[in-house]
Image (cartoon, rainbow, N blue to C red; front, side):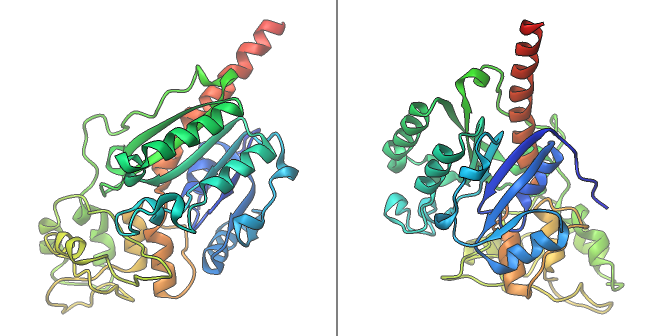
Length: 328
């Protein structure tokens, strides 16, 4: 059982999805005051795993953060397609771009810090003006802003998964914020085979050990797809070839681990994909296979979220301690 971390620091999260970022924030000591998510299956996942959380099901465009004014952290994994090559990189021209809504919410609740996750494409040259506009808007509200390209594999997650995290901290706290450094200290994360061998053995598959020896690298980035396209598979042709090199059939997902006499490449189950994404086994993903896998594939790995949130927490708590000593 996952034991929630109690804390005096609070957070509001938008686009919460299956709870990858929320779980990382909780592990870093942030108490969720509200989690906003439009997908009903993801909301079911959040409520099932944390019945006490205030899960608000609906479009973030209709959410007001004013009741949460003064919260310590506003976080979210705003939709990636506007900045991904698969989504044609339409940026602000894409109706899924929610950075403007995030700025509105910052104005409404005036958090001490902001943490927004997106794909690596956000750093492409085509969006340089957009990034500067975002930074200027946050600066005008009193925040010091930076963005950081992080690979999940540097934080113990068995896949590469490069992601950009935008961090904005009120200037009075910003001097104590440092970006997270790789936690592996030169030690590579587990391979796909090492990560999944026990799950592949659950039904007695006789070829599991030989498969695990072949699956001797970290996974390619999981691709969740969207409601506009994509399903319960491991991505387009290029991604499937990468999975095939690890001995994994990526055209579909399985309902159960391979049977004893299975031949050929095994398929992943949703539980296996969730473990590849850094979710603990105790975190149950709700919904039918396609809906469940989309939640997993689109998630922010909890260990990476925790690593960033730990640094934000340190900055906020350090500043509080300094002021307390100055006032004594």
